[in-house]
Length: 232
Image (cartoon, rainbow, N blue to C red; front, side, top):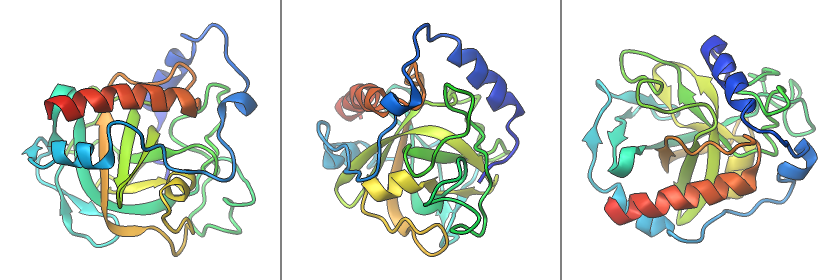
């Protein structure tokens, strides 16, 4: 789901210039059969650190599937977290998995672009959708930038994704086809997803130098997650 992206595009373009030697997209993208990232800290460690919510949002978002209220919480070391649904975002590159033929809401763009200035491939890159700025919460003033790493936790599994798209101002709880696949969630963009029980932890200032480099996202995410779990 792509919404206003002018400021995001400018920030992404500026950040992309910081990489002097960019590996090709083929060498940085993760393909087909995906497994969760897991490792240390564990899903249990991270969930324990989210047990107490210091609400930072002004009111609450709606769970994207059940409409239940979802506050955004402030955590240790500048992280932010919430627990909601996961609807499936298939926007970006047209592929066998994601296109007008497979997704009735498909758009051939994402609010954040890869290092080659092209939209993400939702079937390859684990990414998370954040709500566009509103009176409820503003991710930019919270210090979150395009490409920052998000730990996504579901049923004892952890997947590290990047902030790669924006969605409706009032809803929260959406991630890419690839994120769902890695976590064992039904990845059908029309009928799949998880209605509840998905926890998202965003770590500001963790963007990989090459935004679609999943291996680096995992490295950055685990380091930030370990700090979060330790101080949470």
